Image (cartoon, rainbow, N blue to C red; front, side):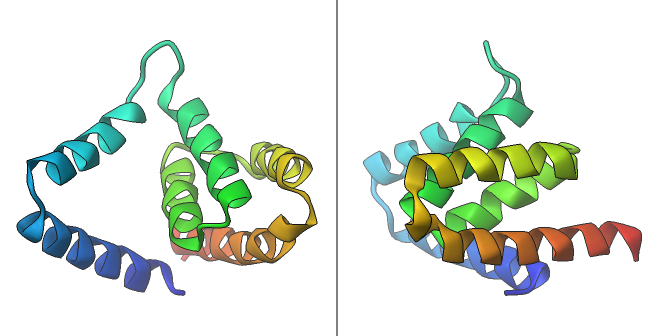
Length: 115
């Protein structure tokens, strides 16, 4: 999935969900966003943790989201490879297809900044 397409669709669906959602759902969305703000851990570390969890849980939308955040926060290729290694170790071989798509999406993210 192309980066622009993913971001556009994610925004559209979030707006739709929040327009329909009750207070508990809106609070959960807010809690989700606030969790990744700097605290005892910096934002980059939290996004890397989110990426590992997303890979292990095999959520391609979450993987794309966290890859985008990691890219925006300046994650380097070498750091990303360590994140991938941890996710594969924790999640096992079932993570491999998601890892492959994550590598492709990361390359697309990088190409947007070099174009």
